[in-house]
Amino acid sequence: MSAPRTVGVEEEFLLADPETWQTVPAADDVLARLPESPTDLGGPGLTDDEVRDPAWHGELRASQVEAATGVCTTATALHRQLITGRRGLAEAARAEGLALVASGTPAVPSPAVPLGGDPQYTELDGLYRGLIGDYEGCGCHVHVGVPDREAAVVAVNGLRAWLPTLLALSANSPYERGHDTGYASWRTIQHSRFPTAGIPPRFDDVAEHDALVDRLVTAGALGAQYTTFWLARPSPVLPTVEIRVADTATTPDEALLQALLCRALVDTALVGSTDAGTAPGDPLDDLLPAAVWSAARYGLGGRGVDPWTGRARPAVELVDELLDHVRPALERSGDADLADSLARHVVTDGSGAQRQRRAAAHGIRHAVRTVADETIRDLPE
Image (cartoon, rainbow, N blue to C red; front, side, top):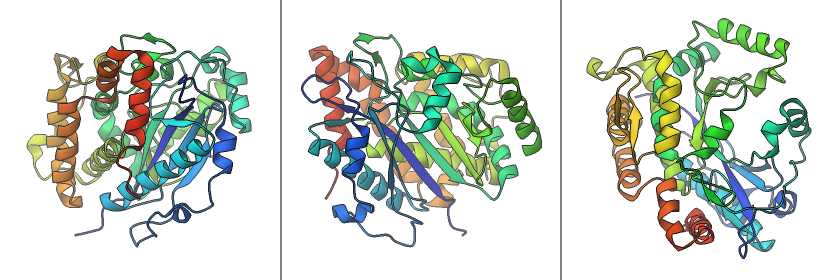
């Protein structure tokens, strides 16, 4: 059996004051406290499953930080790196008197937070103006290795219809600066304002994909070829698929679940299923935006849209269908039982958005405190 496809994860987090739970523009101070190698924190050394250590970065706003895993092939290695990355950020934040919060949007009203220091963020703000002004969203991005960019286009075509279900599983942004939005993933609604946001078109090949991106750049709707906002895309430079639909995961287990499902979707699209009955055929493209909206609105707690029939269905049924669809791929990588267990836990205990709302029965600041506790709970030394 060939080795599983490589996979890596980028997780974005908010930095917050543990008394007020307002976001704090302290990313530079927190990142300056981190060693060059996470192994200095007492984390595990590299194995043959890992190409490099995790890394830490700033993000769009100065209140946001990111942990990026190395390139892994096994679920064990990826889970270990997710934990190591979070532990590093949490310890550095604590040294600055701050808390690390894995929520897709800031739940408590805060003073305006400046942009992060990367010049590309200033360029984005100049291009999109008000679209950037209040955006402080945090996502969980999965990168899956493929043979080349042509294969990446095929993979994205194959997984497009499942993006709403991945979103429903990950929904973790019900609050926005003091009020309940009524959505499970308000970050998705904010993100939908940008050009090319949402599910990408179906492309015949990489040339057609690149030609459209070039036209969008020429038209001024995109700042560069690498700034598309699609929820899944071929990497502009690497032989990988980038799947960026998920809200940031409250726990490392939820991030791992997203990674395993994304890798299995890519593998299913490229290798095919050993059970032809699990291949649902082409989705109804004009229904895909409605499916994304419904997943953002209701998450796991309500109805989803079946992309193949257009009918409303319970979101948890679509999760079951997703697991069935990718089961041969999960079995090939040895992750079927683990993915089933992680998914059942989320369905039973609730998504991040559902857990935030339960905690908010004691006040919205209590909800943020609960998220902060879950973000770093059970991170083994």
